[in-house]
Structure formats: C-alpha cells, structure tokens
Amino acid sequence: MIGAFALLPVFATLVQPLVGQPGLNQQKATGDGFEYRLHDTDKISPAEFKARRMKFRESLKPGAAALLVTNPLHQRSNDTDFPFRPNSYFWYLTGCEEQDSALLILKDPVLVNGDLTDEILFVKEKNPSGETWTGILMGVEKAKEILKVQSVQPLKKFNDVLSKISPTAFTLVEQPDGLSGSVKGFIDFVNTNWGKLPKDSAPISALNVARSIKSPAEIDLTWKSIKATVAAHKEALKSCQPGMREFEIKSLVEYIFGKNGCESVAYGSIVGSGVHSCVLHYVDSRKLIEKNDMLCMDVGGEYHGYASDVTRSYPANGKFSPAQREIYEIVREAQEAGVQACKPGAKFNVTGQIAQQVISKGLMKLGIIKSASETGRYFMHGTTHYVGLDVHDTGDYGPLRENQIITVEPGIYIKEGSPCDPKYWNIGVRIEDTVLITANGVINMSGSMLPRSISEIEGLMAQKGLGNFVSRIESLSEQKSVHHFSH
View 1 (cartoon, rainbow, N blue to C red):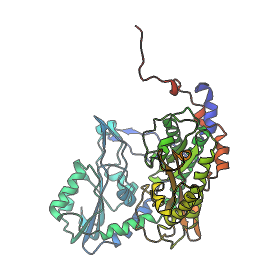
View 2 (cartoon, one colour):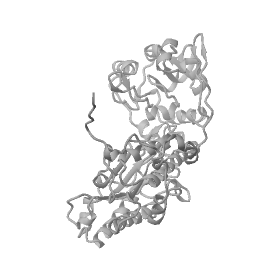
View 3 (cartoon, rainbow, N blue to C red):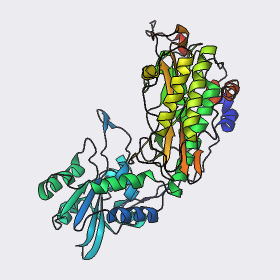
View 4 (cartoon, rainbow, N blue to C red):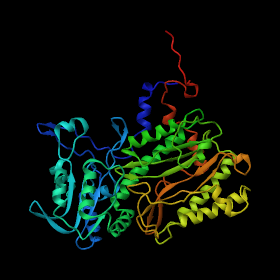
C-alpha cells in the first residue's frame, strides 16, 4: 500500500473545498485578556436576526414576555465535554453561539439602566484567566457590537432585571435538557417569581412556522451544507470496496464535511452494510464490509447551524445484483414520484402517500408481499420532514409553503428471515434528498448534484476515491483482538 506522505499532491486534488474558506485572524492577547475576533464572513446578518425578533414579538400578547435559553455543556466523561452547540430557537433569534446565555423578549419596553428596551441578551462576562483554558468570549460590549441586540447585560444582573418585570403572560420557548449553573438559575427564578411555565404556547407555534420558511441567507447556507455533503457521498461511492470497515466510510465522509467548512455533522452518520442496511438508525459502524453487501449511507453535514440530509444506497462491490437492482428501482421510482409532487399547497404527507403506493405495487409485482396491507413490514417510516437549524426542523405540518426545505426519503428494508425469497434478505435501500419548495415547484438540491440512477452510481464506484489512497496501520481484516508481546 502506498504511504500517505507520497500522496500529498493527490490529497490536494481530491479534497479541494467547495465553499469559501475565509482567512483566520490570529487572536491577539492584551492586558485585559484576549480580543474577540470573527473568523467567518458568510453568517446570517444581525439585521436578519433583528427582523426575526421583531416578528416574534408581534406574536406576544400585550404585557407578555418570552424567555429563550441556550444549551448547557454536556459531559462526555470525567472532565471532558461534548462540543457545544447552541439551542436552535435561541440561535435563530440571536446568532449567539455562547453557552450560559439567555434572551428576554418583551411585548412592551421596560427601563434597563435608564434605557427603554424590549429585548435583553444576557451573556457571560470576559474572564482573562478562564479564557486561557476554555476559549475566548465576546463579553457584554462585544456582544452588543456584533449581535446588535438593544440591551446586553452580564449574567449576574439577570435576577435584578427580571425582578422589575411582571408579565401578564409568559412563554418559555424551550427548556433544554440538563440545565445547570446560571441558566438553570434563570428558569428557577422565573418559575418562582412568574409562576409555572409555560403560560402561552401561541408564540412558540408562530416561531415554528417562521423557522420552517427559509430566508435567502438560510437557503444559501443550506446549499453550502449540501455541497459539502454531496462531495462526501461521491468520495464514499468511489472509495467503497469489500474488505473495508464501515467506520472507514464514515470517517471519510466526516472528513470531507470538515474540509468544506462544516462545523459538525447534522446528525450521527449512518453507514450500514449487509444486515445493518436494514437498521434505520444504525450507528456502531464496526462491521467488515463484504462483497455481496448492500450499503445504506445516510449522512449530512451542518454548515453554520444549517443541516443537510442525504441518503444513498449502493452495492459494496460496485455492481448491483439482480435482486439489489429490483429493490433499488422500486425505491428510486417512489422517490422520484414523491419529489415531483412537492409544490406549494400540497399536503405535507403527499410524498408518503405516493411512495406507499409505488412501493406496495412494486413489492407485490416481485411476490414479496401479497397485498398492500403488508407493505409496512418492509417500509415502516415517513418520507418527509423539515430541514433547517435542526435536521428534523420545526413546522406545523400543514400544506407545503414556498421556501420550505424538506426531505423525500422512501425505503425498503428486507431483514434476514423475512417471509420472501432469501435472495432479497439483508437488502436495505433508502434514497433521500433535501429539496426546496419554490413558487414554480421543487428544486432537488442534493439530487441535482448527486447521482441516483444505477448506471451513474456504478460509474462513480468504478473510480478510485480518497479512501483508497489513505494508508492504514495494518490490514483491518487481519487485526487480532489480542496482541502478544515478547520480552
């Protein structure tokens, strides 16, 4: 196997980023601590966040208030934490990406430090010694400058500010799991002084609908997420071969996400081969990929908070068997029919209804089922959900609206031991794309760039991908569970 260092020119060709990579400004230390710097130039503008807050405020009753808090850090083990990710509701209205923060929105202005305001953001104060260990904070002044919220206050003033307010109606938009420290103190204070929460759910419903309808800036960020995800899928298709482990494909796609600017995966990557192709949310990724396996790969990157969600299914050896081809073509037909049905005014579940009909007919034709009532044995999930700041984003599940982003993802999963011809056992196929509803119909965002036809998939798999050039410590198929050492 060729060494990795000999392939640096190959890496440069294979992993060119698809999105702009703004230059990073080096942090500058001062006597008062580190100066906070912005590193990305393509995030949502403060003006858009302000417009969102104004629209949300309109949904509040006279004299009402709403509180949004962000997620806490979650412990991974001992003294290590999972990477922080803001609460999506809080992020949607502020653009603030720091933990231990809260936003108070008021229908009617109140006096805070002598100024009238109807929105108050509470953030952590700068702490030079702490920042050396845990990262650089905006602090009150920088937060006001960057985020353009009317009033920004330090966390320590939270109780003082709230003690002067007595809303006639109150909404806690969401209470994230595992709250502790200052943020939990916010909730405890409000529960004690303003009564049990929430009192008014109408603003939350309005916010859910608002989040489901994407602005041009949100659509642009989703495109960047999708382009990174499509690049990852293509490298996986080219790289996959029998003898690899599932985690090799998983690691490859997540590398491509990061190479193209994604801060995270949008959800736990699913790379299931053989029997695991029939497990909808399989996450272990340890199995050896075998020659006759079908792979079901459901992966998506997250770019500046915005998710993509794309699934492709393909044969490990690069050539569909007759049985794999038959199942794949049914799902392919169901997905195409579902995508074409997406348009403003269509029922949210229209894709599921159409997919169910196509799959039932196809399975009966193959003799796998005798009646449509048996379809649920092999197709047991919905086909559509909203996509945005969460991969399963908010919405009201009403008629489809212009500028909503959704998925279309039918599938067939035939587990070993199913009451059908064994040639179909352990074939799991799902085809999923992230699509945009427009005034003129639908744009298949990921499907416009990532092949779905059998001939195109087999053509990609005939090529070599980045995963074929990266050397391993030893052949994974020959690794032993116990190593013996001589003395």
